[in-house]
Length: 222
Image (cartoon, rainbow, N blue to C red):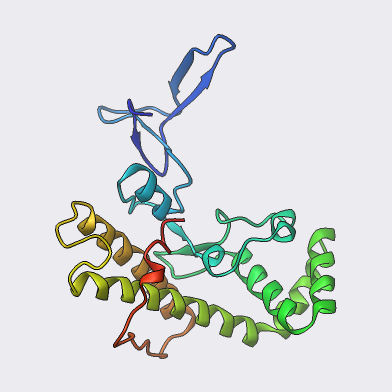
C-alpha cells in the first residue's frame, strides 16, 4: 500500500498468486498522475485518520456512528447491517435506508419486542410491504431518534472542540496531530449538520455550553 495513494475511487486492483507475489493492474485508463487504491472503508474517515494519519474528505458519505451510541448486535449483523451501510451523505444531507431500519429496530426493541420481531421477520423474508408499513406507522418516533442521535454526536464534537480551546486537555496544544484531529471533527460535524438541515429544517441546534466530559476523547476513532 505504501506504493499507492489512497482514494475513494481507486484506479488499480491487486491480487496475490500462490507464491505470494503481488500483481497490480490499472482498472481504467490513467493519465499522468498518481496510482491509487482504497486503504480501507472510505465511508469511515475516523478509522483512516486513526490508522493511517490522514483525513479523506473526498468520500461522498460518512459512517453515521450509530455503532458508537448503540452496539451493532449479532442480530443486526445477521440482518446485513454494519458500519459500512449506516451512512450520512455529506453533499445531499440524506441518510441510507439502513439507518432508518436500524433506528426503527432499536425503537421497537425499547417499546414492543413483539413488534420488533415482526419487523425482523419481515426484513429477513424480504417482505418489503410489511417493512414499509412499519416505517410509515413509526416515522415520527424514528425521526425523533435520528434527531436525538445527531444532536448527541454534535454535542460530543463540540465538547471536543471546547477541550482544545481550554488548553488542549486531550493531548496538549503542541501535539502535532491536533490540527488534523480538529479538522476531522469539523468534517464530521459538517456532515451531521447537513443531515440535520435536510430532515429538520428550521429546528435550531443549540451548542452545549459549560462543562465537558473527558470520557469521549476517543469516541470518533471507530
